[in-house]
Image 1 (cartoon, rainbow, N blue to C red):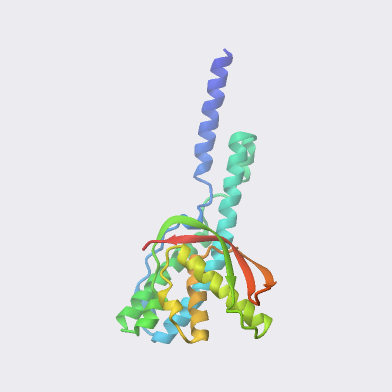
Image 2 (tube, rainbow, N blue to C red; image 1 turned 90 degrees about the vertical axis):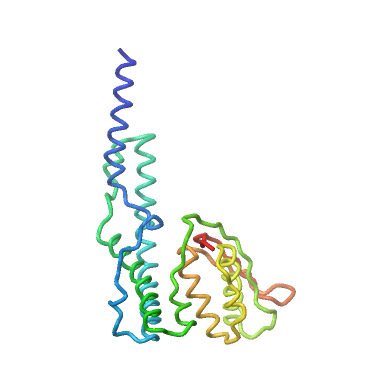
Length: 232
């Protein structure tokens, strides 16, 4: 009799779990891009396409943080519910809402902006800025040291240079080719290019730990976090 009750309890747990899995928020890492036609941007010139891409990327990163937090919370509650206390499943956030749909649209906007740049025959530099990256679905752990060139200017400038160099190493570790970034002589443009690619590849929420000036005169920072692995 006790075995029958145990089997029924196990079956109930499975039924409850299946019913609630469908209500879990999807991780933004698994969300696909919605289709957006490049014609949406037919009135934009090449520079406006770049500006719009920056706006889209900022909004996308903000949504990523929100959606990731919701998905992680649901996953944690699901674990607690299945192992310890199944009524906890009733507190799941529940499914994907308007923000998830907007996130998918923004990912589609990125592809549309790239397509529009190609159609308008924008320069190779601009097309490269707008190029949509392909990811493997995996993440790479980051613990990256970055330093400036050792020439002291000001703490703010030396720190910024160290962070750029740390991000360059992080991009390379994720599988992104940094050759063009390394050979860019215009420092302002180089910084902008590094920030653009970092916003797409380094997972939001990474930390920069300042270690300050070292005995050899360089300014040291350590970047901790994760990056999306880029398909080569």
